[in-house]
Image (tube, rainbow, N blue to C red):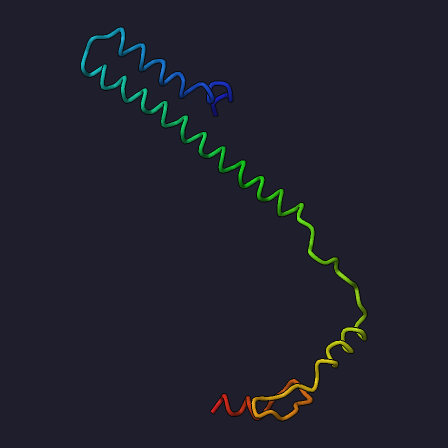
Length: 114
């Protein structure tokens, strides 16, 4: 792997080499190569900036998700309290308007199977 300092300098080396070669050497092939080096250096700089911005945004979103507090604090209840709360919801009415004292509605289940 490249050292970090060299890695960070590569796009500037591409741009500098392209400019120096375009100015010092008088040839169409060198001019085309110089333009390609300059465009490549700028493209690499833009890609790195875009990736780093996306990385920063994803990091900020993760931090916001971890720091968000729940809307209501969780309340611990015993099993008896939960069962009593669920029982209060019964009896319920089925589609015909009759009271159903159990969660199992056998008539409706049989009708949906047929």
